[in-house]
Length: 553
Ligand SMILES: Cc1cc2nc3c(=O)[nH]c(=O)nc-3n(C[C@H](O)[C@H](O)[C@H](O)COP(=O)(O)OP(=O)(O)OC[C@H]3O[C@@H](n4cnc5c(N)ncnc54)[C@H](O)[C@@H]3O)c2cc1C
Image 1 (cartoon, helix red, strand yellow):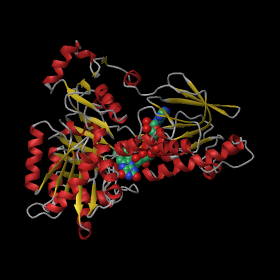
Image 2: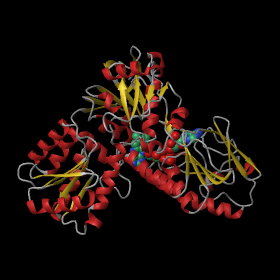
Image 3: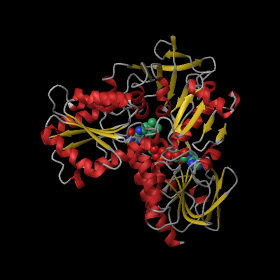
Image 4: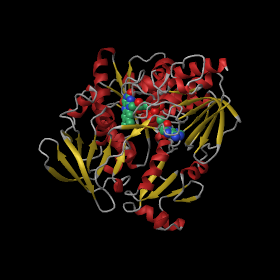
């Protein structure tokens, strides 16, 4: 039987036998539990497994072993099985080493010995890690296949749509993968029909739009009710949190998103500062859990559904969708966040999706293998992406206007970047122009100190500069600040136009906009903290306020 493997490594035969016994008792039906007594023999097992096409789901290794420490083994395992869960087994006295391992080798978890009772200390951790692995894992030869050109905007868009909706797929570049041409021929697809999706049941979707893909893959695109208590527009952290709380409080709750769940957070390769995840958590994983939780509690989720307008009619709100459909609700939560501003360098628009990407490090990192990559921007999102890209690219250059990263990036990221020899910071520089034949190839960097320009080779550029809110779908009666971020609560009352627009005999509730019953949370709001935790907090808080509003109407 070709079951995925859980490998346990410990040089102490008693500990090894005990953990093997517990794991086998619980996971035997779905996983093969293998053991090794040293780091070297574990690496041999992994290489052998790889050669035979086997899958590693989880590696649990003791830290103190004579010739190879557990953290080293776990770091080396990542080169062979990048998505397998990796857990360090430690004694209480080694916890500091474990935390260092989490930071430096990006481990998933550490387990303290002894783990009794396993139902409390072992199985919940292993269950979680196996669920994460299952959602990312896809057997080599089955599943959804996407065929396209690496340097094509529609292919890039389809990749981000599938990844954004947590749909595992296999990407085949028609210029690099011989198998892509074989599959194209078999499906009778010609080059001008790319990108093409090949579904497991044999369906061929030629250059499909997102809605067609969503429907073919079983995503929900239509609402089931005529009236909702709460419609949440935007399924980033704020919207997802609101959906969890709205549904759990018994509100008829509908969540929708134009792209996929998770928002900006889904683009984060590793969120290190979200409470309760000492080893950090990827944006995809946090999103997967949050969406499952919201849906389990009864929230409906529609995707890809973009909202283009909002009308208020006798207290009822009509949410107008881009395709002309309308949805009726008693209250609305605007949680549409923000996005990166497009860079204005000469030639950059022509390379959009063809070497130039906005916040898409996770989706395109693999195609940067061995390449020279430019990251533009000095914030945390740029830093996180640079660290992630450095695992694939041979060189990563961070281009920033300031003289360093200290004022704009968190200390932990600056520290990680300093430890990576293939990342270089390019202070006081700006991108003036980009060029290439159908894709990004060269980049013009200008020094802000000397005005001199250097032209350098670039295989990809990831842009993380300035932000703009997604607030244009809201009516003008929802007041905003000069940059377009939505005013809420007491802050809104200071606006000159407030008394002209607000006709209620009460002040707006906190997080309520200048239209009664329309609330805003997360990065869309003027004064937002731009953090996952604050967006989640506001989403939860908004539901409490929506309930207060509904009780009055
Ligand atoms: C790469 C990256 C790394 C980050 N790392 C961290 C980190 O480590 N820690 C941290 O605390 N924060 C981090 N952040 C910031 C954090 O992700 C954001 O503050 C947070 O996601 C804001 O959540 P939100 O729900 O308000 O909005 P968003 O996350 O922006 O979500 C808004 C959602 O609304 C949808 N939408 C927009 N317009 C429409 C429309 N008209 N119709 C339908 N749907 C629409 C979008 O598709 C999107 O899904 C990071 C951000 C990025 C980009």
